Each structure stands twice: as structure tokens, then as C-alpha cells.
Picture 1 (tube, rainbow, N blue to C red):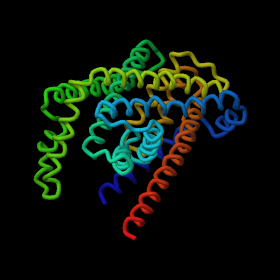
Picture 2 (spheres, rainbow, N blue to C red):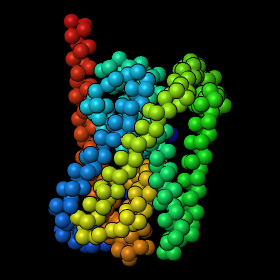
Picture 3 (cartoon, rainbow, N blue to C red):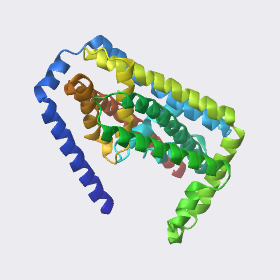
Picture 4 (cartoon, rainbow, N blue to C red):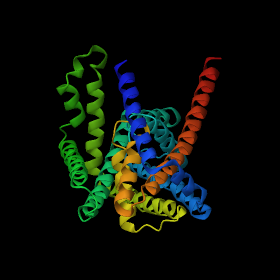
Length: 333
């Protein structure tokens, strides 16, 4: 009940922020932007945004290979999109779909949950590490923009530095075999709950696999980060083409700043970062160009793109569920 109440409250806050910024930029200005959209650049945007899933899937495949699990790229791509779909509708856009990825991997490829979970946690670590580096670049650009308020610079800087130190601690404790997740689990005394008592052993097993990866698979770690860099390059082209479709030829600085704010908005505990994404982009383009409607339109198109892949992801999950039911039926008859 408490979780549902928190979800409802977060959605109300998100809708309130969304409504405020829609009123701020004006509905007419948004309609005008979409009525004059350039279909060529919009098509290029959708091509690039689709390709952006490929290096993400490749990154996970590299990590799985380091765990001695060779899985078809197309299967991993399917699981990646499925996980993205689930994550998008949860309070944290960047997290939430990991269990479905591990479960699909186990059912279709017999990869045990401990190994699958280990590979996914490492995958998220690489993703967050890359996000922080991207964020540091964006923060550096923010510091030299007089149009951006000091409080926003401090807020972004504090969040990025906090994330950076958390990852350093996590990495250090993992390679030393100290185990951050199991230690936190015990510190919160969750192991005292009867049904969760054995879960601490599962966490320790996962952490051992992570320690082995970081200590003995450094080449795979570097290669997985290279895969993230490919994703980052595609993200730049993605936002560039989307802004060009609105008739706005943005500089690389504006594109990176927009991506940085997009990533920052996804950390707010609201499904689909509702309201926070619009607030960030509208404020950015108002400060830089005096055209907040462009930032709001960008946010809406990013949402449309996301919902398309959410639909594809849930189609994969539905098909997967149907196959599992069919296999169970055949096994029992």
C-alpha cells in the first residue's frame, strides 16, 4: 500500500510539473513546431535511436562472454529492449527491468540467476560509469554558461560527484571481496526477516562473480566501456537529428548539455521521469536560446520514441510468456 501511495504521489507531482511547463511554453507553440517538422531528419532520428540499442546489447554480450556464457546477439538485444520497457514504467527509468532480463536469460538459455544477475549488475555499473563521465563533460560545459543559474550548477555537480564516489566505493569493495550489496543487506538487518535470510548468501555469490570479472576480465571491462562510448556517440547524433527536425541547428555543446539533463532527469523517482524531463529541457533551451518550446517539444518526441520501444519490449515479453506457457503445457501432457 505504501509503494502504491508513493507511486501515485510521484505521478501527481510529475503531472503537475508537466502541466506547468506546458502552460509556460504554450500549446500553440508546440503545435507549430510539430506542424513544421522535417521528416527527413525525423526519420534519421528514429534510425539512430534504434541503432543505439545495438551497442547496449553488445556491452552486455561482452560481459556475458567473460562469464563463459555465449548468447546470440539478437536474443540479448531482445532481452535488452524488454528490460528497457519494464524500467521505463517503473519509478526509476534507468532501473527496474533487470529481473526480467535475468529471468528470460535463465529460461531460454539456462543461465543461472546468480550469473545472470552478476552480468547485469556489471552492465549497469559500466553504464553508470559512462553516464558519470558524460555528466562530468556536461557539467564542465555548464560551469562556463552564465545563463545557467548557480543553484542548478551546484545541484548537478553534487549529484554527479556523489554518483562518482559511490561507484568508486562499489568498485573498490568489489575487487577487494568485501561485498557492498551483502554488507548493506546485513546493515539494514534485512537478513533477520525469515524469508530473506538465505538471500544474503545469494548476494555473496553474485559479488564473488563480480570480483572475478573485475580482477580477471579487465579486457572485457575495457571493451564493454568502448561499447558504451559507441552508444554515447549515437546519442549525440540522435539528439542532433531530432533538433534539426525542429529546424534548430544545435551546437555540439547544446546537444551534450541536453543529453546530460536528460540523463539527470531519469534519476528522479517518477515513472518515465514525467515532468522532470520537460522541466530540464524547457529550462535549458529557455536559458540558452529563449525558446523553451523547443526543449518541451524535444521531450515529447523522446517520450514518443520511448513508448514505441516500450510497446516492442512488452510484445517480446508477451511472446516469451506465451512460449513458456506452451512449453509447460507440453511438458505436463
